[in-house]
Image 1 (tube, each protein chain N blue to C red):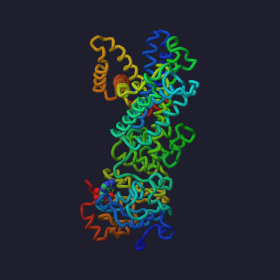
Image 2 (image 1 turned 180 degrees about the vertical axis):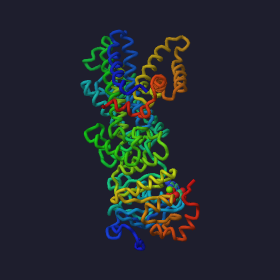
Image 3 (image 1 turned 135 degrees about the vertical axis):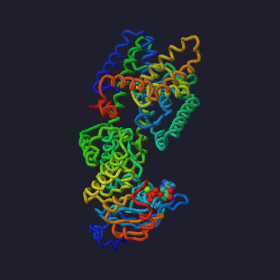
Length: 344
Length: 266
Ligand SMILES: Nc1ncnc2c1ncn2[C@@H]1O[C@H](COP(=O)(O)OP(=O)(O)O)[C@@H](O)[C@H]1O
Ligand SMILES: [Mg+2]
């Protein structure tokens, strides 16, 4: 692991460089590679948040992301969807997030009693139900999806000023990242991790395990909702296909490629996925078989390192350090050292 | 009920209402009657060992007292309150904590954080998603307890890398962190080396007398040194009660238990 004292400087450099990229990158790259990566990164962060702190792999995150997107489209009166509201975009976004969190809490009530493969299946079922509901309820999802969702005025036009939505996504990404790191060191965050490790002991210590899990799932839904709102601002449209089973699997792949147990892996995985998705398409041999090619690359990464790319980076940097300086006895074992940085 | 216990050190048990009172407690798992008809009174400050061969129902009795599951018959009263059907988490604020026969720790957290979670468990504010001024005191308290159970040197290690002995020490630390009035210890010496058992015995003897101790233990040296009262179980029932010396002299106890190579559980 990178020494704890370097975490802040490295993080700051990464963010500053990221913020300056629109100066040197083409509009296409800023929009189609960078912004898309950040949005998928936030969605993946909602998954990794639950996986790393709660030991839960949720397949409902794309569904929740879709709920937020459809809610924005309907509330802000885009083309398609119900035409009864014509809310201000900011209000629509706020309400969309609230609706998504409420639905997340409802799913959480059911899912919080399960673990492992059962949790996976329950969340998958909810994801599929959400998709089917939107597909059947064409009042809500429009016939060809909801189109021409307008961005808030300050963002200007997605075509002409792609850097604006990019910066918004960057700021939200940083806030989500810092928020998750901070949360991990709070009483609630530590309780959630305690439940991950031993729910029976948590009960014996006086904790309401079901309540904590349910609310934690609601927090995961909140993060997914942020990604869902940003996605429709950026993409200006959403359809039931957006929350199909394929995106569900791709999001899981992003999280696993990045490393399920480190929150920064969300954005690393998303960037790798988006770059591969773009580049592979332009290779003749691959063409339409992008999913197959991605699947093979995914398998290779997982076989190489169960901790994903973050796991590879970690073992490389610790190997490099070992040849450099003597091992600290407790340093590396102190997995929370990284998290402590987030708030001290 | 427990009137026969004559030469006991505590006198509180007889004069004051018991802090734990079981009446006709039974617990059935499908066709297995794990515990049946147990009456038990435990007084403030008492040190009581629960002995019995494997499968006697000792752990099941602890689970009923702690609220892991309710009894199928009978009632449980804690500190004068009927808690028969209350979940475990509602018994912690009353002052009840426990350890487990097989360690139940948070392997992905450090020793200090394990203890911190235990301290917060009884302190409250479980859903607080931010840090505040209280945390310093709570973390401090967690580290003090770590110190007290001999883990000062490994507070910042992940629990997953601790030795078995250290994990058993942390089990007890987790129970002490709850600032308990009554502790249930389920085989705290299980798997400990000889020297570790001696240290454990000393630590238990050094516990404040305001803490009541209920102890399941296979190691007779530990059990009969720490306990002043003994309850002997067999086949789900209480079959004998008395002081350690009475228990040592009891023929039934010998037949059931002491005869079968005591002290060397593996
Ligand atoms: N959760 C359970 N489900 C089914 N049977 C159980 C359960 N817990 C204990 N038992 C049974 O109850 C009996 C007593 O077990 P236990 O209380 O663990 O005994 P001891 O702690 O004295 O060794 C055993 O026959 C055991 O198999
Ligand atoms: Mg047992």
